[in-house]
Image (tube, rainbow, N blue to C red):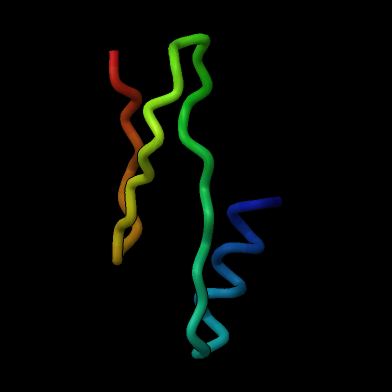
Length: 46
């Protein structure tokens, strides 16, 4: 459902921002965010 909602928003022709969470881990927080101006496939770091 999330993908369908994202595609719907993209087709509306209005400015938008889609937030997607990264992978979860038990590691210490890094305090950073990644910003992209186009859709990319997320590949988790190992």
